[in-house]
Length: 340
Image (cartoon, rainbow, N blue to C red):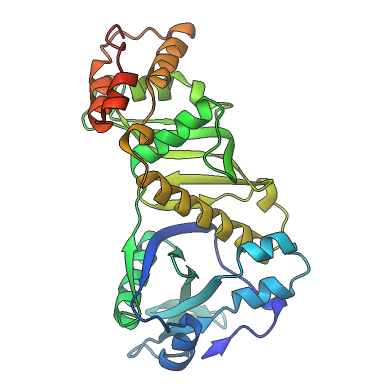
């Protein structure tokens, strides 16, 4: 199994887009990802048009982080449980190419790859497109089924709404994660209306005051995307979150201008904290998972304040969240909204 030889060689292709987010359940208590990959899985080598090659490489991520002077000790400690492997594959195509000034038909070899990071023992992140993320899951289930079980994570739109409501009331999400600003969102309804089935807000100075977003929420549309600048332990990360389980870390804020090993370390730490926050949110009692009555009053009043008259009844969204927060305490907190 090939391994990255030195710290200076740490590289990755493309953007920091993670289309695969998974929880991991360890079946074999003695499971060691890098050892299994090194000893049991095939190394990548050059194949042929009739037998394209694929294989794995250990990224030695923790060693790169530890030996890099660019990664501060505080961040190094946050990712010391991370392990990285790269799956590489080739594709051959019989096509016309220019060679020595002539047009010839040759077999052309293209290579590509995607990276898998395991936040031991709980989470796994795939940096790659959606097709590669699905392939990664299939490979893991086939190659490592004796050792771990993986389950895909998709963010409940109500989790994104919870984050939206926390930011609107100037509250943090947890001990070490908050939103410095929210700038973009996507809202989607089950049916078309005169506002459209899907509404987006881009590059807003404060999306929590955007009437496009607020009217969509009052019409009981789902918040399927959220983007902004997040603060994590004094560091700032610009990221786009999708309810499909996709996170795109943008080349902005503390990511901008940093080395690739710094970018990856901070991105993985952000993902680790974000997914842990999602797990905590899922385990909250119903009355705490959903916005309180003040949230709906605030966005109703904000629309009126900006001259966006609410000409439709909002009782449907109120009823929806009364039913979701089905405990008596939440029902009482939601009372008094009938006039909206």
